[in-house]
Image (cartoon, rainbow, N blue to C red; front, side):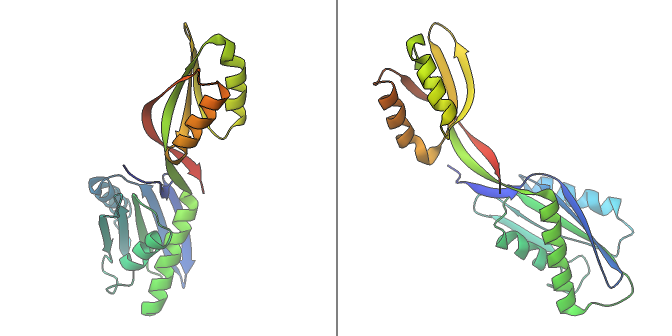
Amino acid sequence: MRANYRTVKGYGESEYVIQRSRFITFVMRVETEEEALDFINNIKKMHHTATHNCSAYMIGEHDDIQKANDDGEPSGTAGVPILEVLKKQKLKDTAIVVTRYYGGIKLGGGGLIRAYGRAASDGIAAAGTVECRLHFLMKVTVDYTWLGKVENEVRQSPYILDAINYMEDVDILLYVPIEDEDEFLEWMNEMTNGQAKISSVSTKFLEFNV
């Protein structure tokens, strides 16, 4: 079962100018290498007149896929600094392209590394980041005599209420972090004197801004 992880919210874009060179950053959440390559190729088509379209991506629960491309810049001065930013921020399932329009002034190896690193960081900031935390969707079934108390307690709790279904009995659906399952079961059983029927319906990652 995949652990909690950090990634970008979605698409982000930023621009940074140094010594007349424009560094335009494009960031996207991707779940497969194919999605990452499609994203990179689309940016390259959009900016086919650019001097360089350098890129990096990191995909998989254990960062199984890590790729960096200097696209003509001196080896190790573009793609690797972008990838290092992803590693430092511990972002999974993320692809970044930094498009450079050369301004006529050379930056040198160290200058390029700093420029591409900053451009990647700026792009991530523009996209925003989230932590994806795995939750159980729990179903709590009680008779109507317990509804008021349970609903009130749930709404004041840290657990996330999803829905209340009014049937012969009442089904209350809520999200519980997987690491809190035992604590939740104890809390709910104590609240209802063991009268609630509790089951796990499914699991889902919920996103929280970080």
